[in-house]
Each structure stands twice: as structure tokens, then as C-alpha cells.
Amino acid sequence: MKKVDAYFAQKDLVPTQLGLAMYLDVNRDTLHQWLVENGPFSDIIKKAKDLIENFWQKRLALGQCTGAIFWLKCQAGWKDTQEVNVKHEGDINLSINIKGLDGANV
Figure 1: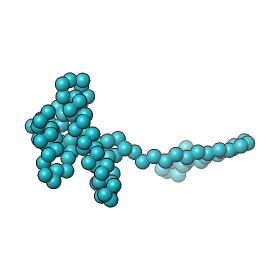
Figure 2 (figure 1 turned 180 degrees about the horizontal axis):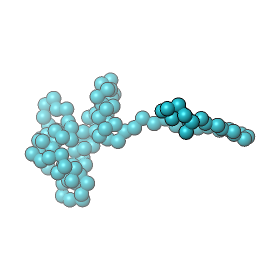
Figure 3 (figure 1 turned 90 degrees about the vertical axis):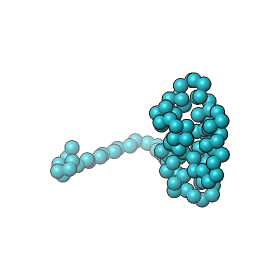
Figure 4 (figure 1 turned 180 degrees about the vertical axis):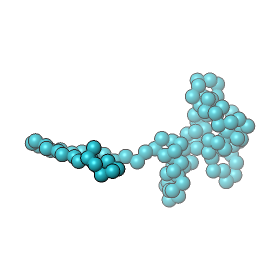
């Protein structure tokens, strides 16, 4: 789609999905519909979304992290994860006391 190519060819562009939708003169919901349905625009919009994500990934490499991390978490499904492996041999006795807001045991 030539109009998508023209969007990405803009000088000093900070690409976003909303920016692409506005450039294509459609709303965000229409762009999302094109993305998820298996219609004639689906592949084009998927590639455009990949180009947008790639832009934000490159910002990480350039040390422009805060905005890039925020965008990647909100728009690209990135997550902070922590993996904890616990290995214990033998019996475990665990007692938990949880207090309610009034201080009473729950």
C-alpha cells in the first residue's frame, strides 16, 4: 500500500499505530480490524506494526529507554518478568497470618 510507505517515508517521523491510522484517514478501530481480520490489508498492517515496533526497539539500543520501554510494554506486549526457582528437600511447615484492615485475623 503506497500510502503506508509514504507514512514511513516522512522525515523525522516517530511512528505510532494511531499516527498511521490518522495518516490513512481511518480511526484506530478500523486499523485494528484490518490487522486482525484476514482481509486484503491484514498483511500490510502487520508489516507496518512490525516497523513501528522495530523503531521503538532501536530506541532502546540508542539509550532512549523510558519512552521506548513504556511503548513496548503497552503496545507490543513486552513484560517485566522474574523467574524464581525454589528447591527444598524435606518437610515444609508454613504458617501465614493475614490481618484484615481492622487488624482482626482473617
